[in-house]
Every structure is written in C-alpha cells, then in structure tokens.
Length: 202
Image 1: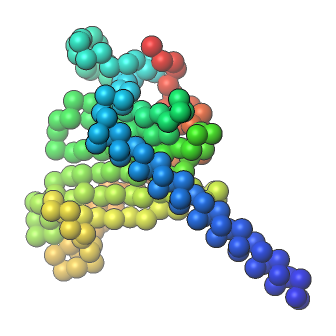
Image 2 (image 1 turned 135 degrees about the horizontal axis):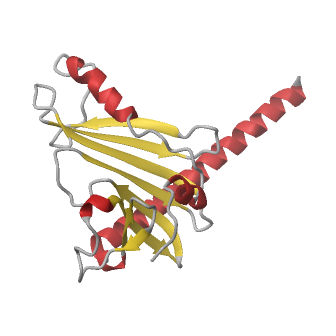
C-alpha cells in the first residue's frame, strides 16, 4: 500500500511540474509575441492562403495581387531565433463585417504546441451586452484533450455571467458560438500546417 501511495504522489508531482513548466513556457511565448506586436510590428510575417491551399506572403506594395474572393485565411507569424513561436489565423482578411473570428497559437522553439486562444466577437444588442467577446483559453498539458477555460466579456471588456438574469436568454447562443471552431486536434507546428492544408510558402 505504501508503494502505491508513493507511486501516486510521484505521478502527481510529475504532472504538477509539467503543468508549471508548460505555463511558464506559454507565458514566455505570449510575452515575446506581445512585445513584437506592440513595438516591432514590422517583424511580423503576414501571409494569406488561397482556395487551392497555397500560402503567399502579403505584398504591401501590391494589395490587389490576388482576387479577394480567392482568399480563405490570413496568418500572422512571429519567429524567435528563426523558429516559429506564434501564429495568428483569421478568416476576416480585410477586417470587415460584424463578426470577428481568430485563433492565436503559441509554440516552443521545438515546434510543440503550448497553448492557444480562440477569439469570437459578435454583436448581441440586448440587456446582456451590445457585443460579446468570447475568449477560449487552451493549454496543452499532454492529455488527449487540451484544457480549456471559457471567458465571456462585453464591449467594455467586463466579464459576463451567462447565468445572470440579463444573459440567461443569450446563454445558449453564446455557448454554441464558443463551440463553433473548437477543432484544435494538432499538438505541434507540423500538425498545424497539415490541419490548415498549407501547401508551401511563396
């Protein structure tokens, strides 16, 4: 019995250490990416994907190089020591429309997925909120399914309680929207490229 208890305690220690390690690496990657976004946006590599899966670099001198109806997705990539540590993908290439949807992915320098943030913003226009900003925060602790924490905010970035009297009627819609793009099945950079069906860089 003592051996079993010792083994369980040892496994718990490993899991806690692993989670702490992932949290620290994720925080470091987020901090690095945010610093680039805020202070050195010229270091962000911008690409878009066409319907045929080809990934092309955004040419600031020729914005209309491709017909926008052919564009499926846009990507922003940040590297550290020549390794991709951040990718943001969005289907709102031109930044227009009432619905904004994007996902941010953080990797370590070996290409292992550390975590992700799923963002869904949509207009509601009722007592609950004029606009809902959903954030799904994912962490990769090496389990079959990523750990996910859901957060809902209003247009003033104040967290929303979906069980409050003003929001109960909007809860079903909010939860359905939160699940809408929950398809993060890969666990590394190569898996991301395959999931996105990206053929090659140009």
